[in-house]
Length: 111
Image (tube, rainbow, N blue to C red; front, side, top):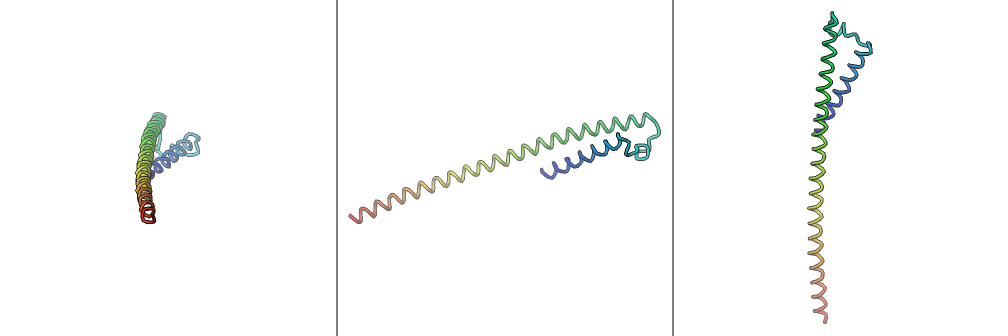
C-alpha cells in the first residue's frame, strides 16, 4: 500500500509541475499538443482540470486506504502485545505458585 501511495504522490507532483509549467508559458502547449485554435486550448485546460480533479480524488482515496491499513496494523500489533502480556502474566503466576509450593515443601522437610 505504501508503494501505491508513493507512486500517486510522485504522479501528483509531476502533474502539478507540468501544469504549472504550461500555465507560466515555460512549456509551449502549441508545440507539445499541436494546438491550432483557442477552442483546442480551452479543451486542453478543461482536460487538465478534469485530470487534476481525478488525481486529487484518487490520491485522497489512496491516502485514506493507507491510513486505514496503518491503523489496522497498529491494532493487530496491540492485540499481539496484549496476548504476550497475558501469557507473561500467566507464566509469572504459575512460577510464583510453584515457587511458593516449593518453599513450603522445603520448610516442611526441614521441620
